[in-house]
Image 1 (cartoon, one colour):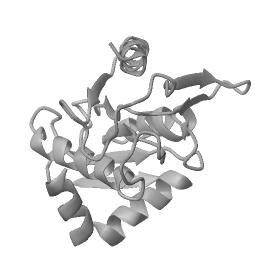
Image 2: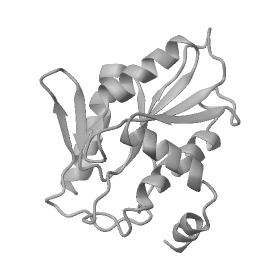
Image 3: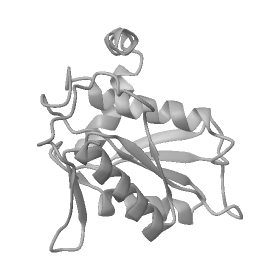
Length: 185
């Protein structure tokens, strides 16, 4: 079993237990546009001195679900793309903390743990991140009843690099290159 995969499973389990949230892999089976992950490319989760959680070397993208309380749920959802300069994900303060604030106003939040650009694990690092956020939208819409949301009320936001990713998605959502690349992989 790949060390990165095992670590991802352990991280998912710990986040799930600590925050009572569900962690869902974006892809079942092979990840489109991915190269085999080298043994040396191991996901790293670090708690920094200031107490924030940083994740690097993501090879298995996921969404962490923060469902809004039923009594105040608006049926609206947001996908949160943490920043980190495309070298790391500021997962706690630009992901988990923001998701919890959205829950307070009745919005279900999904924190996206997306792959970071790397020639080591990606065929084309230009499109892989967009594939991850598009796949997140697809999975959330597909399972909208499970999450108690409306499929036409899903937004995407991000911080820093995650904001760039969100705006790039807006600009290239129907880009034929991405659609063609996804179909050919």
